Amino acid sequence: MANIPRSHPRYRSLVTRAYLAHQMERGLLVPEGLIAQGRGEAFDYLFGERTTPVARKAERIAAARLMQARRPVLSVNGNVAALGARPVAALARAIPHLKVEVNLFHRTPRRAQLVEQALSEAGVHPVYGVHPTARLRGLASDRSWVDPEGILRADTVLVPLEDGDRAQALVQAGKTVISIDLNPFSRTTLAAHVPIVDELSRALRNIRAEALRLSRKGSVPVEPVPAEELRAQYVGFLLRRLQRFSVAHPP
Ligand code: ATP
Image (cartoon, rainbow, N blue to C red; front, side, top):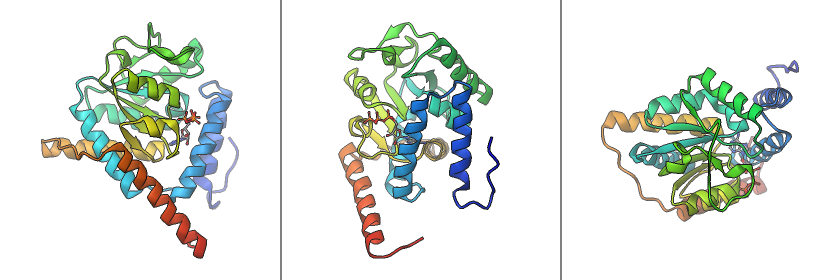
């Protein structure tokens, strides 16, 4: 990978980019995954590259929903496997009945195997969806493949970096959909019951921390914040931040 000086102000972003480019070369990511990362970075920049108070609230709700679910599943694509295999494994340990399923927009046996490998090296066992045999209704192409023991039967699905059609198909199938997507306007964010607008690894870590906090407390209260309200609060946050930048230049 490229030699990036630690002193560079965008060090973390550059390291992540170099890492993802490397993962694309070895086949875990497709080129489209790099474009998706670029869009995510742009929104993260606008939000201040920190978890916002409203995202933290959504992450708390997500943790409660996952813990209350009878059959929760976390859906993993190439970007999620590359950037978040460890926090995915940690979340699966914090919520013991949480299943982890491979789900690829651009599916080949080799990619499915690479995602499985990244997940199992991080400590996820078993990995569902490597050889899926069921299909989700209302979706054409490889995106519709699901594991009959995983997403097909799930009541709650956590979908990081999902495409809008699939998120909508999961809602249509009667699942509670929790999304992680930095774009507050994406179709996925608009379709989700619990939209989390935050960076993938931050969101996964925060959901885990909330889940552990809730299990220590021994009860799982769900704050009933409607998805529309969360979405409005994300946009409100963004507007206020842009407003501040329009009159001054905070660092
Ligand atoms: P939609 O179909 O939901 O309208 P899309 O098809 O344009 O959106 P995709 O390219 O399928 O979007 O999904 C990528 C989404 O994931 C983008 O909205 C992007 O903002 C978001 N994203 C990319 N990287 C990250 C990341 N590291 N953390 C959180 N979100 C991310």
